[in-house]
Length: 365
Image 1 (cartoon, rainbow, N blue to C red):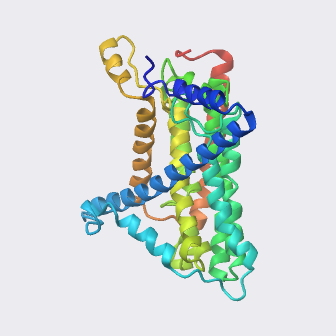
Image 2 (cartoon, one colour):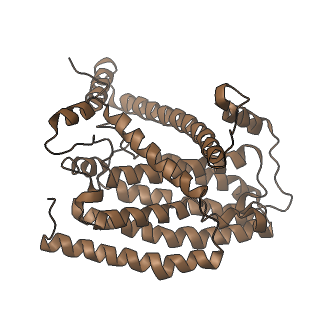
Image 3 (tube, rainbow, N blue to C red):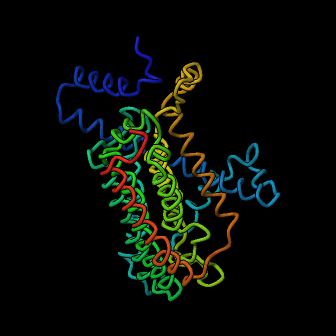
């Protein structure tokens, strides 16, 4: 008997076979699969965003020796539900001189780029809404479209603070995307593939963060810093610097339009941490230690999807730790750090990885 809790690829195959057997029409089957995947991802995204908001508040509170939300539900677990209801009940106001069409489309672009990206993440064997052989490249391209929504929001609001925030966002996100991409490419040269499922399988003998012979560790550090900047998180949150720009690019937004920006930000945190967990830490692959079979069998008792979410959770906590530890950088410091330090280091790391792979000077094949 197949245990679908562990063999999720068999579960997907069985569901697909059942649909073809009972419906037959391939077009109807494909439509049902698309609708089911979309509904599942929408539910996952909604719950995940509310959980992340609550966790962020709790992490911030404990760092500052506070309790955080405590009133709505046990330990405030329903506080984000209450906030969501409040945002849905608020009036959506459009500034008189704003470009109404672009003003309305901007939050949709930001949310859509993040939502589509989630569909390419491998949560477990076969448990992936869309599996293409260029998954890593595609998700980097789609997720980078979010900056267009930010630029559109700042420009269409007809507010000088929003426009300044949008221009900062364009300079920051586009700059740090280069270092993030190069950091991932430094490990891709070892893997030889950009298919997410193949990336995970290539780490069966060990995670690339340590198998890449030093290049993986440095690539992980660079990617973590660059992806934090991409998500506009402290210490790189000059896009929404309250002391300078009121709220930056989303100053004029309210109600559910503002909620979409908020939702997209937390989704992007999840996405970059999921990519990091997949590329550097084996994704859904369990942690194994060579020669310790009893311990390895114990780790195998944990389902693959639980390994994936556990690794992502640990990385999200690391990003939140950064936010409540480091002070905000000035805009000139932020851009200088990227172009004078992080970018050259990324290029050197990529060159080192290429040399190590072509010459075979590494221990873990």
